[in-house]
Image (cartoon, rainbow, N blue to C red; front, side, top):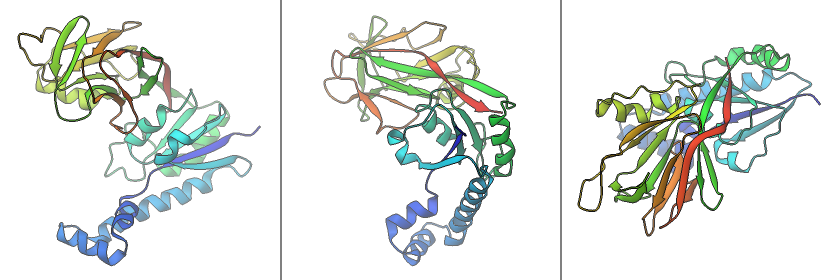
Amino acid sequence: MVPRAVVVVRPTEYEELLARHGTREQLRFFLHERGRTLEEVLMHHERQTTAMRDVLGAIPADWRRATVSRAELDRFLFAADDVVVVLGQDGLVANTAKYLAGQPVIGLNPEPDRWPGVLVPHPPAAAADLMRDVAAERATAQHRSMVEARLDDGQRLLALNEVFIGHASHQSARYVIEGERQSSSGIIVATGTGATGWAASIHRERHSALVMPGPEDPALVFFVREAWPSAASGTTITEGLLSGEQELHVQSEMGDGGVVFGDGIETDRLALDWGRRTEIRLASEALRLVR
């Protein structure tokens, strides 16, 4: 069968705001009160819609095609022969990666002056050439490591950047990590891709001597956020590297509200109730990012 191009998008800022405020003039007033203009928001919306039109037009005529929004990813069934085209910000690639099983991902950045483009390095104008290269097996790919959290009941969560283990609210998380009872703001376990984001902020703030892994390295880095020393809780295990098949073991002591989620998507989470154990390790899956 011919390939299927699956184009992944998210609503523009204009679409989200218009859905909230109802009419364009109400939106104009709302933006004006906050020091922004409707024209600015519309400009970014038009860039995105123009790029979307160009990308759809670049799909070879004999290919199958589908379009999926970020909100639909957890209900969309990707096929083994799909070519996944992500149009938007870097975070949209991370949102998509956890639902894939090795399909090639082409990241397209419609606004390089706004977004860094680490995971969306290509301009939309390159879509046709890139899809042809993938189909002809000429494309090179970077295989970015992912992280897996697995509960003791078999539930599993994947992430491209990092997983968070902690409490769903701002209260302290209570747990046992590698035999040490702790109370903290939670634990971050990051891949080499995530090592340039949330984990990098923690690494920089505490002046850590850890060498952060690269995006393709078979390693993870973990940080305990603001561990609290007390008669009942320790602070000796606050950071470290996990390489190869090493795992981080955490057992919850949170009566209610304990969670594990990935890549900042709090709504897609696993419940980490009292006594529940989780193991965090390198995932067998990797993001296949077309370069």
